[in-house]
Amino acid sequence: MGRRQTDSELGRYALLVLFLLAIISCCMVYLCFSLVFRPRTISLDSGVSKFVESRQPEDGDCCRGIEHLELWGDAVKWGSDFRVNSSKQCCMACKNMCSGEGGPCLCDSWVFCEDKQACGSKFGECWLKKQKDPLEPDRRDYGDQVMWTSGQVFGKGEGIVGLETEYGILHMKLLPDCAPHSVSYILELLTLGHCAGCHFYRAESRGRFWDIEGNHLKQASFGPPFALVQGTLEAHGTIFKDIPTEACPTIKRGSIAWVGSGPEFFISLANHNEWRKAYTVFGFVLPEDMEIVEKIAHLPTKPEVWSNINVAVLEKPVQIHFRRIRSPGSLNRDSSRSLE
Image 1: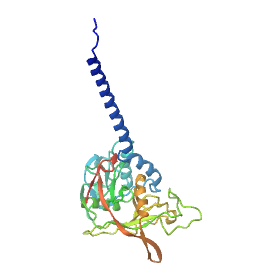
Image 2 (image 1 turned 45 degrees about the vertical axis):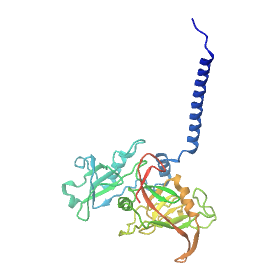
Image 3 (image 1 turned 90 degrees about the horizontal axis):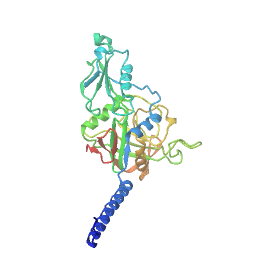
Image 4 (image 1 turned 135 degrees about the vertical axis):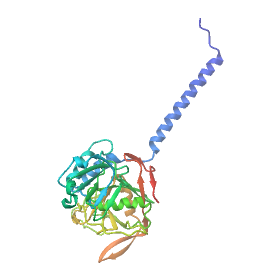
């Protein structure tokens, strides 16, 4: 037989219900604030894949390596059992192991023996490898006496480094298959641990000549302003060696290219079809970070004349520090390690 509940029991149940409702309310409030104020997250996979489709060099089979360089590393395909006719075919074989939609590349570096006289019985050997750290590849040997040609391949979400400024971090996707010498230098800066002296010193907006997507407007001038930010990547205490001309696609919005043979470089804010193929492109800024480049382009400047060309020089140069990106998939603005 049931018994009648006392007032004290009813009070305890009421307090329990109110306590549960309070917990549920707090959880809902926390969830709402988390969604509204959570740190901005960049999806590298989606950002890179969409950007690469429209920004990759015109020769989609761009596959270059560095002669007289032997990269070490764990072999995923033994060259003694795998021979091809050219370094490009070796590079493409590595790329073909990097075409999956998910997960890291099975191959991120390759080594090919293409000097018939020096290679002897090893001529045509193509070694496909996987580095423990793609941003710090294991170099066994380099010099004229080395008979190998080597290169790297960065898949979706890989080969991304950060250019840290006081206005935010520019995430830069490197293109080692198109500009191996250029990328090799950038990776040297990463291992150096600093880039003292690296900075932006010139900043010019799109003006009224290009739209927000970087397309040139009809009947408009091509500058000045020239829709770019320019700087130097020569670190104090290092000896810079001129970069040879490499892949020179048409400059697009977000392209990162050398001025001449470096170390001066620029990031383009527009699609400069009028420049044709005049500059070596070694990377691009992810679309999500172009707003930071735009912000730098609108900083206070002063006019100067360089070789009869009117330019806008920053009143206060913007310092650049390299950051090594930890996560190859998606990352938070704070999920990287400063190298300086």
